[in-house]
Length: 227
Image 1 (tube, rainbow, N blue to C red):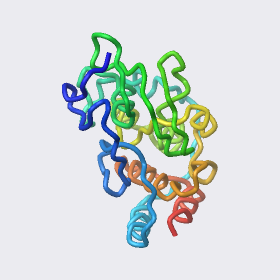
Image 2: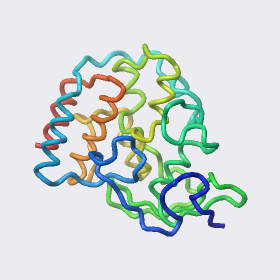
Image 3: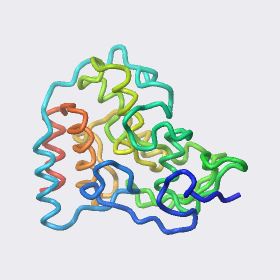
Image 4: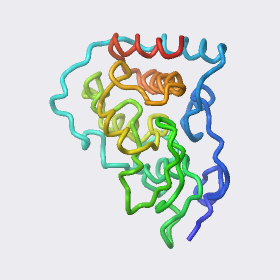
């Protein structure tokens, strides 16, 4: 059963081709995908953004668990797009980035099938819920990284916001997300080289928004992708 997205406030229909966006044109994360940054002007803008990122030391992972960032894919985060719309964050993100969307019968939230153009690998993934892990929603800035860079001292509400903020979320090919783990840009970048500047720009948008530092090595790696 195909359900129109109009009822839930998304901007494309189940059969419409998704118009993906550059991070520089997507400051709130509500536009789908991750378009490569290629022009000289846009690369200069990306470098300017990355230069705003603070540098800090990576602390201990002691005490980190996923539950420190709230219920998995909670709809309760305040002051984030899609919050409190009655749908889990994961489904909101699948609806944002997927094409040929199909919903569970009787639901306008639960995505059970779709096609995804994965920005990290370039793969076209035809996904069904029965093979759920084949598409995973990546935290661009990993939660464990956030914890070690200062989120351990945040309020629970702020951690719930960053865990469910669409700016920090990207549906991708599951095995690649698992390979990334909690790595920063000095240790992991998308396999597709042409999207790396866009990826680190998105990483910078998140850490600037939440006033999180990155390690010196990570900042250097971010700058190197866009120069």
